[in-house]
Image (cartoon, helix red, strand yellow):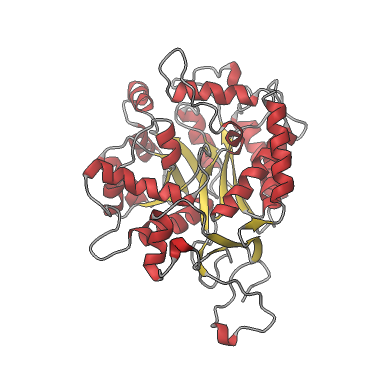
Length: 433
C-alpha cells in the first residue's frame, strides 16, 4: 500500500490486496540508485575511442568532452539528459545523483537564472520519471595550488558566494518536492583549494556531499607534492567526513585510507565501466568490504548505462586481480549477486540522501520487476535469479519499473521513449554537424 508521498505504507500478501490494485507479474526488487552521473557526457559516449597522435589518457578524453560542450545550450542539455534518464529507468535505475558541473552559457557568462541548467536536469528527470539528487559542482581552479581555470572550463566556474547563492535558490525552489534532493559536489581537491573547500563544507551542513578523489595516479602524486598527504588521507585528516559524504572513484588508496573510509561510514562511489574506459585503475573492493565499507554504483560518463554491467565488472576486476571467483560474495555459501545488489541499493540511497533501497515500510516505493519468464531466468528463483540477472547474459530482463509508486516502465517500454529518442538524435546531429 502507498502513502501519498510515494512511500510504502504497508506490505500485504496478494490474497489481501485490494481488487483495484495494479498487479505487475515478475520478481520484484528494490530500485537501484545511480549515484554518479554527468548527464552531458551521454552525448559523447563512444566518440573518444579513436587513437590520436599521442598516447591516449584520461586527459585526452577530457579534451574531447570539453569540445562537445562548446555548442550545447540549455535545450540541448535537457534533451540529452532526458534521453539518458530514460535509458537509466529502463535498465533498473530508479534515482540518479547528478554531479552537475555545466553551469554557464557557452561564453562563460552566467544565465539570468544561474541555476538554469540545474532546473533543466531536474526537468529531464521528471520527464523520465526518475528521482534526482542534484549535486551542483563547485569548480574554481584547474589544478593543485589554485591554478587558474582554463578557457575550456569557463562553463563550470564558481566562487564561494555565487555557488552558495545558486544552492540557496535551488533548495528554496524544491524544498517541498518528494522527487528532488539538493546536495553539493566540490569537484575534486585539484579544482577546489583547501580554504574554499573548508568554507563551503562548513556553510552547507546538510544534504549529501560528493567529491571526486584519487581517481588517477597523477592526482595522488600532485596532492602529495602540494599537501604532503594523499587525497583520501588529506580529506580524512582535514574534514569531518561522515555518512553524508560520497567519495567517487577512490581508486588509488592505501589500506589505512580504506579502513578510515569504512570507519567514517562514507559511501565510495564506484563506476567500473567508466574507470575501465578511462584507464583509471581498480578499486580494492575486497579489502574495503572486509572493513565493512559501503559502496554504491554510478554510470558516470555513460559509456554504459546498466547496473548489471557495473556490478559484474566490479566482481570481475577482483577475479582478474586475485585469480579467484566469487571474491565479493562475503563468505562461504553466499550469493555474490545479492551482496553486490544490496550494496548498490542501500549505498546508492545513502549517497542520494533518500530513504530507499529496500522494499520496507517508510521507504520510497521504488522497485524493479524482473521478467522471471525470460529464458535467462528460467528455472531460477531467490538468489539464483539475482546471480543469473547479473552474471548471465546481456539482454535486459527488466520488465517494469516503479518510482515513487508510479509505473514509468511497463513491459520494457517507457511511455515517452520514442519521442524522446527522436529529439535526442536531432540534437546530436546539430551538436556534431
